[in-house]
Length: 329
Image (cartoon, rainbow, N blue to C red; front, top):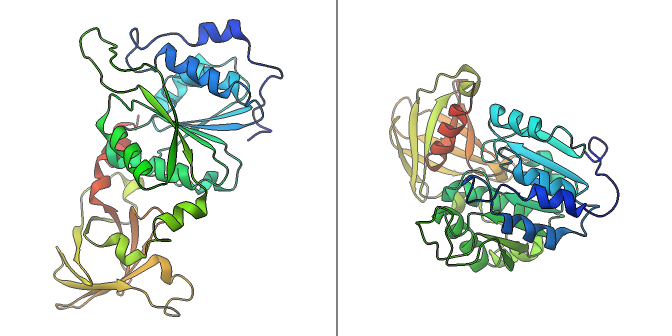
């Protein structure tokens, strides 16, 4: 990526930055305030050798400012139309890599082996999406700062940030943007800061604080799943095949009948045990399923003992599935 997009040498050009911090949020409610952008300049003016991951690049107002501050900007946007508008707006910039990427549904392993130093989160603002984005950003090994917009205006952002602080996953580095009380429409008074910057604790410290890695069974207890035929995301035929509820320890219910469930035991599946559940339906025809869970524990590939392959998505992720569908041209 660094070879694909190189920042111009030298310190940020202040004349250019003065133009780039516009429009203000009073003029365009979908961007950050000029004060927010200036705070980023103040914080990251000496980070010209680093890479920033912009999660939810939208139309590119912040992308432009970030390109003046960092060696490389990885601009993620799930809507191809919006991503194209960003690229056209910033066509003169040579250090921005544009990636069509859904931060909840797509695989962050794409970034895990690259040195990303800062993450700017401004994608979907519901709690489940923000928590997912924040958890994945915290897991990136080289990240020292995570910026989040809309801390004061969106309940989902506020909750996800506060919980990460309470769990000891990060510490508050500083607030950014407009200070309370403030308004961007001249009517609504907002009682908290526009944005925050978090500093992640070390990866191992975060794992110890959380009681080490949570066992798969414990993580999936009391979760509900919507089952679809395999290939649903390529076929576009989004009609559920059924549902599964892991409502009690080792006991569950489903549209296919009652079931028993457990994590695969050591040696049962040749090394996949940590990521695999065994589902055993207790009524005829007593089918058995091996459920391989993704790293984020939001999706499962279901291999039934009769050879049928299905996929399952956590019920609380269905809203972001809808957002992804609406982004298709």
